[in-house]
Image 1 (cartoon, rainbow, N blue to C red):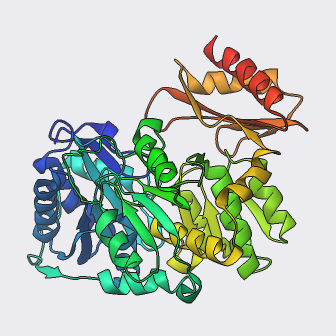
Image 2 (spheres, rainbow, N blue to C red):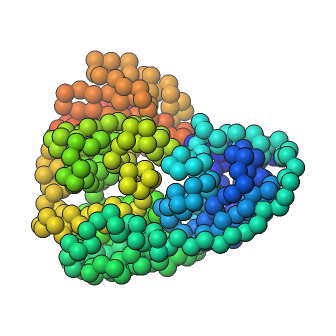
Image 3 (cartoon, rainbow, N blue to C red):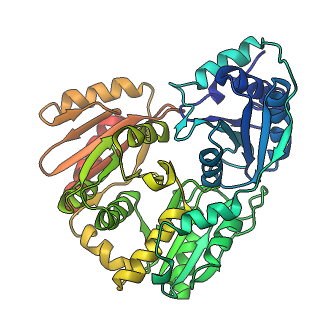
Length: 446
């Protein structure tokens, strides 16, 4: 069948409904998933998108027509879906387009936790099966089985902290009308926390606006509210709840680099000597704090498929990505938005003081640009040009190019989905960071 090949991405399937991803495409993806994995059971959950029911019905019809049973888990966050896949131990499909605008839908697909289908491992195989449109005849028709793991999930994530140590902190939380609101309220009802919620109701119309808190306009309301309420901290989640962001008591956004460093340090206090992964974009703050705490710092490519595989292989305690994904050994190496929020509550309760105190020590030493995206005609050629210009530096090519000098370093990597080059740069002073950032950007944009 004719299908837009661009919906088959590096880590998931994602496209505009019904232009790129309609019921027929979803039906055939369901059949292809069962055929490729040779499975007779598939877990299926969905987010709050308006197209969710139509896409869910189509993909599950494909799954059952191909002879597999559907274990439906309802409206869930992606970390709840990962939990269900772990508990049941077989493949799964989450109907979601994560933080994309409301017109999109798609699938995040588990082979067997913690291993997901990715562009290198399975997604392009699904594309070929869908395009061919020829599937083996099923010997039976699958059935539907309903499962609810909500209470088990609540107890499981609460077991990762000492609930008795949590103090009556004031927290403002914004799930962006995504899937996290209901489960967040359920979990926090077990804690002595004053929870002030914004946009808690799952609503595919997205009255809040966008689903990606990395975009400043999607966290402005939360930042203002944290200050107005005199809250201890603010939490934001993306649409499907696998990414997490925090606002400090000053109303300032906490970068993913610094949050990874803070969480890594805290977890190493609990499990000394453990291994910690950060992605190629991260601030020196992460490796420095991990080393200072006696842990082992490891670098990995950007993307959950790579990080989960590496964590499982190398027995890694925790991993953090600059983009807001946080992965936990005690959560089967999966990423969760809820778990880092609980760890921060425990940290604030047991350490005393303010989150801004921890951040100010990092802000005085590490000066980061944040991710800057530039449209370029040929991202790979531009990376080669930068490697030549900065050949005096230490060059790593694990993911794009990471080039380091004694007082500054940067990573450039191409987008998986657009003709963009992504720059992350850091220096030991604000002045040098700005100077080097502008210097590298001038080369990228020339």
